[in-house]
Length: 326
Image (cartoon, rainbow, N blue to C red):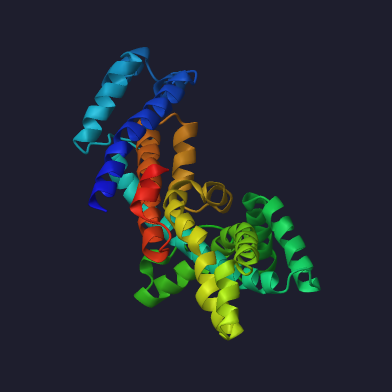
């Protein structure tokens, strides 16, 4: 296991460098930069613009700028946001809690709904229940999450049961501890429901297909031949093996903390990492974009590694030699 982990960690280094370099080049290909956008304001003198370009290194060649950024990152210096004029690390950390909370709540909701519903429709294949829920899933997979967010906002506006967007109330700072918790939950219900329902459809289809594939496998027929109760066959043999893809998907969920909720955060005005990254790209805030991409890349690679380790732990058919050969 130690050799497998060390090997994967070493392979992450060229991947991270390659992805960040491509991102840096892509940002450089965009016409203009953050400072040139400021130059459109006639109130800002040209001398100030040139001074800012020299301060941020925007007058240097591409490779020099990337090298300086990479050297700073190696010293854990992610730079200063051009748009917000504050430390990038502090800026990301201040938004991370909101996105982590939203992503975990939506993932928990989608899994709690998708797994039991997937089992039910698989065990009742071709029944009316299976057909109705399958059609509902196809509709859920075809409707974008941002459209569901608009519907949720309209629902909140018409009923008044939930806040119309936002992360917390304006008087949040003056509330006591339990009132703050209640306020957070109240603002979290609709966004978590939007993301959870959007992701539930594909997960339910995955669970259904896994159950249908495994329930007629040789080892399942052997378990039934031994006289085991159907409930034990289902939960111990079928369901346990059907959950293996979900273990892998849990690792990729780490990367979704950054990008998965971006459009929903933008629509519902949630102060999270997704909205922060969208604003950074629009304003050509290179330090903030690069730090966000770097964090997303590391989360994806680490999540993939953790998923592989978990898969080896839960599935005796998978070992480190098999994963290393892939």
